[in-house]
Amino acid sequence: MAPRCTLTFNEGTLILSGDPDALTLLRDELTYDDRIRSWRAPAYRYEAIMRTLYGAGVTVTDNARNYPDLPLTLHSPHKPLKHQQYAMQQWLTAKRRGVVVMPTGSGKTFLAFLAIQSVQRPTLVIVPTIDLLQQWARQLEEAFQIPVGMLGGGSHDIQPVTVSTYDSAVLRMNEIGNRFGLVIFDECHHLPGEINRSAATLCLAPYRLGLTATPERNDDGEEVLQRIVGNIVCRIHIDELEGTVLSPYVTKRIFVPLEPDELAEYQAARKKYVDFVRANNIDFQAPDGWQRFMLLCARMNGGRAVLQAWLRQREIARCGRAKLNVLWQIIRNHPAERCIIFTADNDTAYRIGEALCFPVLTHKTKAAERKEFLAKFRSGEYNVLVTSRVLNEGVDVPEASIGIVVSGSAGTREHVQRLGRILRRSKEGKLAQLFELVSEGTSEMSVSERRRANRAYNRRRTSC
Image (cartoon, rainbow, N blue to C red; front, side, top):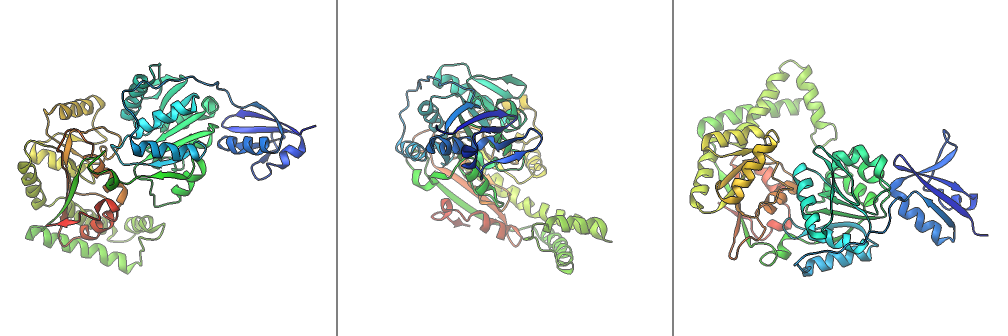
C-alpha cells in the first residue's frame, strides 16, 4: 500500500501528518512542533512538498489548498508583443514560478494578465502603494470583466481575483494564504524586506510571478527573492526596447559649479566631517558604519557640530543656487514638454517648488492633492512636477518626456527608475531626455559615477 500524508494550512504554515515513510521524504522541509506534536513547514514550500510527495507515489490528502479552478477570459484588444511572448514562455518553462525583469513602460501589467489567464486559478496581486492598488484593480476589472477585490486603503474586500498592498498582505496572509493559486508581486524588489517577505512565506500559492524593472539590492535580498518567488527567468533591458516599445532617449550630465561663497562653506563643512570620520576610523562600507557615525556624533564633544556640518555640506551639494538657474534654463528650453524634477529629499523639493512656483509631490502630500496634481499634469494644465522619491516608481505618467535629476542616491536602481518615468511611448516622434545636475567639486561627482553604472547609460554618457 502506498504511504499516505495529510496537509493542513494553519496560520501561514503547513501541518503534515501521515506515514513515517512519507514524512521521511520531507525531512529537510519539516520542523517538529512540540506544542501540537506534529510536523510543520512554511506555507511557501507547498509546491515543493507536493511535488516530492507525488513524485514518490505518496497518497496525499490535501486539506491545505482552499481554492477551486477559476475560468477566466482575457478581454483585450492588445496582442502580446515579442518581448512579452518571450517573457511569458520563459515563465511557463520555469513551471510558472520566477521573476521577470522588464523596463518601466514595457507592459509588465499585461504580462501579468497573460499569466493569470494561463493559470486559471484565483489570483492575488500584491503592490507597494495605494495608487497601484487602485490602478491594478481598475485594469484587472477591465481586462477580465469580473469584480476585483481590494485589501488596503480602507478596503477589505476579498474576491477570487484580489489586489492588496504589501502592508495589508502581511497583516492578512496568515488567514488568506491558502485561498489563491497564483500570487503576483509587483515591484517585487520590495519583497525581501524582513517584514514584507512574510507576504510570500505565509502564502501557499504554487504559482508565483515577480515583476520589477530593478531587482538589484545591496543586501541578501536577491537570494531571498529567488527562494520565495523563483529565479530570474527573463531579463529585458531598456536599450533592447528603445525606439520600438519605449521612446528613444538621451541622458545629459551637467556639471554645475558652486557659487564662491557656497564653495567655501561646503569645503569648510566637508573638512570638519571628513576629519572626524578619519580620526575615529569610521568605515562606511562596514554594516554598522553609519550607525557608528551617528552614535559617536551623539556621544562625543563636538559631535553635534560634526553632524550639522555633514548635513550642511550635503544640502549645499544637492541644491546650490547655480543648480536652480540651470534647472530654470532647461525648463525654458522645453516649454511645450512635460517635465518631472527629481530630488533626493523633501526639503530640496519644496525649495525648488517655492523658488520656481512649481507643484511639489512628496510622501507628505495628501491623497486628494496628489490625485489633483497628477490629473492636471496628465491634462497639460501643469507642465512641471517636482518630487522627492514618490514618483520613482508605481505611477503612470506617459506624457512626461523630460526628467531632471537635481539630486539623488548613489544607487543604480533609483537612477534607472527615474529614467523609466519618461520612456513610455505616448506619441510618434517623442524623444525622452534625462538631465542630471551634478555639483562640481563635491561628493556628488562620485555619487553620479556610481549611480550611472548601468547599461542603460553606457551609450549615452554625455556631459557638459
